[in-house]
Amino acid sequence: MGEIYEKIDCMIGEIGDVMNHNKHQDDYEKNKEIMIKRWEKMNLQMHCLGFALNPFYYDVNYLKSPAPGGESRRAPNCDREVVQGVLDAFDRAGEDQEEKRVFSRQLSKFQGKEGMFGTLAARIDAQSMNPISWWSTYGAETPELSNIALKVLSQPISSSSAERRNMLNLMRADKLVHVHCNIRLLSRFTKSYKDGPYRKWDVDPETSYLDDYAVRLEELEGNEGQEEENSAQASKRQRYPEYF
Image (cartoon, rainbow, N blue to C red):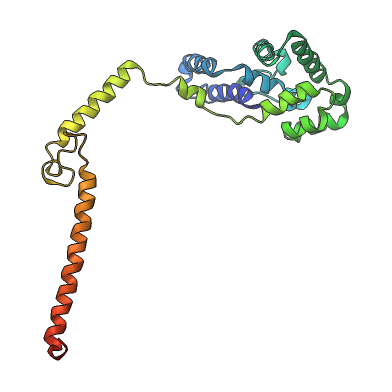
């Protein structure tokens, strides 16, 4: 959860780098608009909060590194959209105004690298340590914010929000029903529909030809076994008549 916001920004920039150096460069702006609209549909306050609570994205070396697309990197607290998302997340997470103010004060302390957050060890570990482990190590001075950070950063990335927004609409459902009905009609012209164990399977929903077929198969196997036994007995009578 703490990485998806930054990954989306990098993805858009990387696609721009590729398209700007080939025959599709004139289509980049249109594609960028489509990608941003899709991202806005999936963008949640928790994505912003996870981005803002990841210590790696405040590292000086990271902020100086070149970003895809040629844009300069910004710390989460310098991005208006991220800040607004964080405030909205605090509004939902805080039980009252006092708790929301506690979150804001502790976030300011974290972003300003005050106290334990400003130690050399904390700054070095922010570059390489897992953010969950980092908060477990250095979050003692901000227990409320640390608790939120551990919960948010522990969330796995999922595409379920996009899938929920991709549910069947009326037109697509109508097309699927149309295809299904036609497949059923076509199946009535097959030989198995007329004579096989699944014959006229869709005519009487109360009748299970599958169950009937299983019973007939067991009876057939039983009859075949009895016939084999009778044949073996007859062969023995012919070979050893003195014993019968």
